[in-house]
Image 1 (cartoon, rainbow, N blue to C red):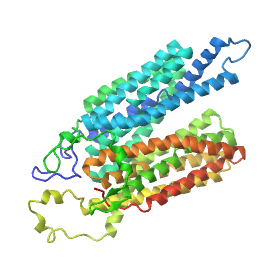
Image 2: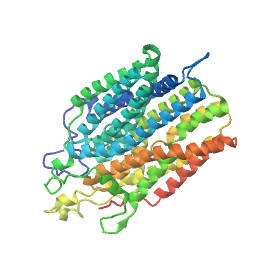
Image 3: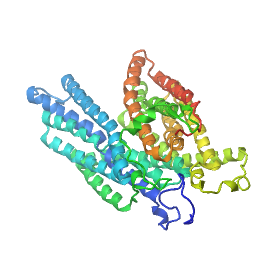
Length: 498
């Protein structure tokens, strides 16, 4: 990029021709930090459930001393109390995760993406050490401390961290690379999640119950220090000059909610494009969010899967999802864009545009080039196709009759996991540069709400179908919702809103 070239919305905030180590480009640093951070956050997940059961058992024994032989915690009253405490903890954690989207947006708007990423991670590390203190206290008090500790998710949660990293990625790479890089970042985070689960189980085996929590705390602190040293700082929008040379106004943390209403396009017409996209993403997330849980339940109910077989199946699913997002998805996007560009006529650029090089040139350059419009147009096609393929593959799982077929299904389902990154790529093309952060926040918000809703909705559906001896039909219900999502996205067009 020459010094005289005018900057446009598609220009990355970090110069692409700036000298930097090939293996430590800003996007690679984001992927590395995301992998390590998600691994640290997910490390104590399975141990936390066991901790809640143990402390609930201690609390019950304090009032009802155990008399007899066998496992003192293996009693209906204890199991009921542990389930109630776990549900309370999960509810607080879920609500905190949704609210953290708004808190993260506040920090992004005020101090930038780097601050938003790591301030939330600091609160997550405090939550880990609070869990250790709760385990040390134990009993009913330990349960209350553990539940109260989930309130820290409001200030920092995995969902908030992922929003901050996606926002940082959007500001780091050119517009043409965003969709592919969103997918690769999601793959790095999925790999981190799987690594964290494996490490958590291993640490519990060799270091005991405190091992996963203390290791996660130390790892979070070290990753924050590493991230502060290698992630480049990009000032927030209100501290950067806009197209007119003036800084943008400070946005509100609640601006993401404005994305849920119909807007107007550049011609002043009412546009439903953005709202349809957001609703379609919600329905798609609703359809796919319960699939991993349904795979586990179906394996146990129909084929008698033990924990080792269930873990192997889920690990294979995570590995395939990581491989798809990291290596296959970017190539599909690149190949599809080349194919679509070859089918479209080439627009003249010399004779017909020479007359517009005047004082208003900077405004003209704010519009996307024909190539960028073609790229975004293919992303919309890919988004629809991904959801349609997801509906077909998920519906096919309802025909599984043997255990090996369920393993194959778990390995094939990730081939339709490009919906999330494709949606993020499309939404950043539908809004102006001053609203991209809010649009990403809106996508993160509906994905979080769908994750909460899918457990209640399809959990009830699975229970009803299992009572009729047809638990596999829950996948047909998932497929039907995914097909609804596809139909909602059919009217979406590349018509940027004002």
